[in-house]
Length: 343
Image 1 (cartoon, rainbow, N blue to C red):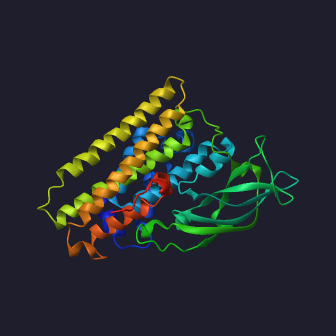
Image 2: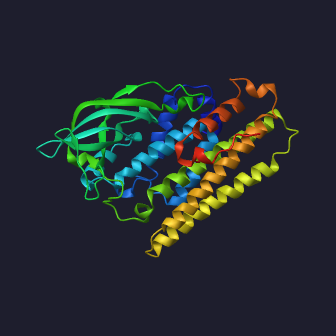
Image 3: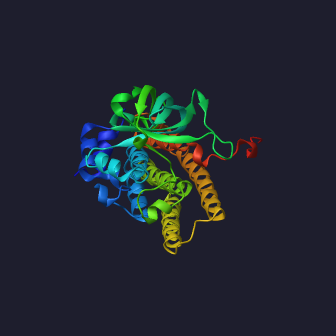
């Protein structure tokens, strides 16, 4: 078993998660925290999984982000037919991952299969995936198929890695080891059994009922908090004279709040009630505000660390770049219309 210190050492300055760390991930089943036990997963409860994600992000940004996004993709084991899920997840190294973007088309065939073509960006963990997940517009005779409300029908698909072409184009300042690459699919036939819809489940579990928006919000928030905690640790090593106690306590307080929200969500669902739109909005707005505050405090602290913190080989620089790369995710980005750049 690798310690956090050993994982940090392996991934410091790395451009890819090392084979040793990947082997550790598979041995411990870390990618299967959201996979039901009946499919060979760990079947974590929501709060339990969020605690794990926080710890992984605190260990290393790329490590935590890859595990969050790929374990999150493995969550789709719940959305596919049981016989297919059983087949796929009997393998200990099964790793889903892909893009949330709608980057291509799925042309419906006469036999019920689909012909997939397109380009998708930002598939975290791409070099380590066994299957790519993607969203595509369903078409027939080259034209989009509409639902009863006049909206284009979107389906998600699972494609074996052998049928995808990875484009290693990740050039960001941070998350360098996360393997967040683009990929293309060209004229690949996929059976309808390997398609799924986000809100259609073949399992019967509380986790299935958590709105995807809430699931995404909280899993990302614990990543930001984990990286912030790691940043404080490295910042203290450079400037031990600065009092970061309040910052550390605020991170801990907000982690407790995120875990409280997770328990609250599960309790509501346990009572056979839905998570209201107002509740979802409340959770999301809390996330937007929290990421804004974290970003402000990390940036303020960074400017107090001196020239040593600008060394691209330093640990604090890597955490800083990882955090602000992750913070570019569109999920918590406020509307640009509300920004005021005057001073």
